[in-house]
Length: 304
Image 1 (cartoon, rainbow, N blue to C red):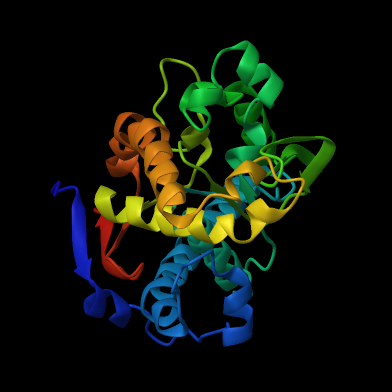
Image 2: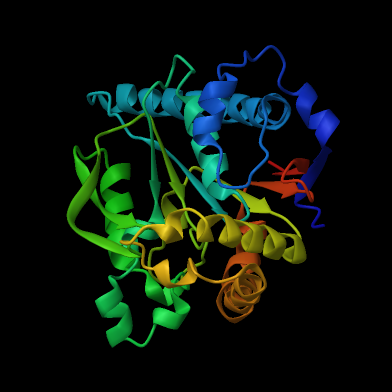
C-alpha cells in the first residue's frame, strides 16, 4: 500500500472512537442497512463512530476557518456546506455506509443538518443512453450528465438556496420525469456514487467540490459474490413488482439466475470497477477495507 496512507487495523481504529456516544439503536440500524448486509451495532461503534468523530473535527475546523475569513472581510457569515464524497463498486455497501454516516453526523450538535444525494439522479435518462448507445455501460462515467452534477455541486458549495437534483428510480431503472430532491444549505452534504472520485481532463469534476472523500473497498471476487446474493434476493422481492424494469428476471430458477447475475457482473460491473472505479481508490482521503462478511477489517487514512 502507498506510503501516503496510515493503516489502522480494526481494533486500533476502534480505540479512536474515544468517548463518542452511540446514537443509533438496532431498530434505526435495520432501516439503514442495505440488502444482504450484516451491519450491526458493533460495526457502527468500532468503525463508523471513530469515522464520525474524525469528520466532526474536520467539519468544525472548516466552519471555524470560514467564520475567520468572513470576519476578516467584514462579510455576513455564509452557510457553506461541508461536502463528503463516497465512492465504491456496485454491491460493496457504499449506500449503507453513506446512510449510517448521515445518521451519525446529524447527531453532532455543531452540524445537525446532513443531506445525502446519490449520483444515480445524474445518469442520463434511458432514452438518451439508448440514443448514445450507452445502455450497456450504464454506471460508466460517460453515462452521467457530468456537467449537470458539477453545476449542482458548484451551486451547493456557493451557498445557494434550494438547489435541485433529479431523482432516479431503481424500480423502473430510469430518471423519474418531473421529480426532484432539493438541497437547501445543509451543514453537511454526502454525495454517494460509483465514479465520484474520477479525475478531470482539464474541466471541473465532482471531486473538486469535496472537502473529504471516502472509498469503500473489498476484493473483487468477494464483491461479485455479494452482487450475486443481492440479485437472488431482488429476484424474490423487487423484481416481482409488475412495474420493475427487471420483472423478467423474477421467473428465473436459481441456477439460471446465478448464471445471469454473473454474466451481468462480468460484462458490466466488473469492467466498470477495473477500468473506472478502482483506479480512483487512492484519490480518497480514507479507505474502508472490507472482509468477507461485509465488516471493515482495516481503515486507511491519508497522511496529512
